Image (cartoon, one colour):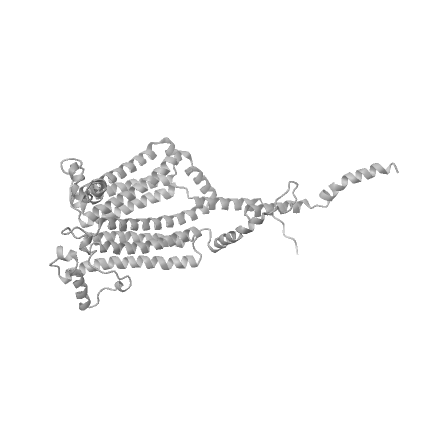
Length: 486
């Protein structure tokens, strides 16, 4: 009996080890641990793994967590409806729409330069799509135009054939605008319904569609300013308001930029996801502190170019390019006299409190000077940034080759735009040069946007790349089981 006591004690001490170690399949435990770790990383489970490889019980959930269930369900439903990435066909459609907007902006400049914008005195979005069909319709349209201030003050001897030429210019511009809207709305509805776009891209497309509609309303609001005598000074040259013209031009540039940027971002996203490891290295390189100044400078340059474009809209609205047709001088000096730049004629307040901003926006002399200053600043900024990338040892080493090529493209377009602007001024704003100058502003802004797309780190694309890398690593680390023979 005494000899059996040590034997019982040994069995008693070994019992826990037998129940946990001897009767447990460690291979299955490791496999389950790997699977639950994968699910936990993907956010599909709340179970935890104990230190010895066995699954522990689910952790307690707060009763208040049920309150967030509807919101989480809505987010999951939205994520299931839209894919993670937009289809490439959406990118090509956006770029094609941007090209169409590019063309209508240039054609709109031609419409203004030929003084055709006020030939149609009504806004009929649906019935105005068709031109006059017979002589009676043409007489009716010509009668409406003869009652406008432009005909009475500028074109009192215009014939019906001459009216038809300017009418077709404005009609083509408006028809092109309708085609831009239709060619954007219908494919947008199709791509969203067919789940060809991601959730953020769907929101951006809806925003662009709203911007197109707002642009149409803004265009008529601009034309309306040139059809009534009470909207401009009596006896002055009949023209549309320079404020409304600038707003119309700026909205068109915003619409074009949004289409271009989102189309290029989709293509870049696909390119980055095709090689996640190279994309990760590129992101680490672009996020380096050595490139922070360059990244911010590109953003500031885009804003500066856009402000210069708006200044050009004021110049066009006031016909300020028809004075001081010399460069770099303006009269006897680099600037006109102060009394001319800040004239009391443009002040509407008895205390002259508005003399500064009214002269900056309504005085043709000061408006042209402002445009010269902004254009010169843009050119100087581009060349300074190019010199920074060219002669800085840090940037020469850290800046990717695509960014260097993009910077060279910006330098080429800014040089071309400055040459077009100076020649347009010297030759009294001829039609071909003025139209090319407006197209050059769009090309310059496009080059800066392309440079920014190569320089700025897309947060969403970086997140998708990291998720793809994580999934590939988990798949590579998960064990494979041999197939059982049947």
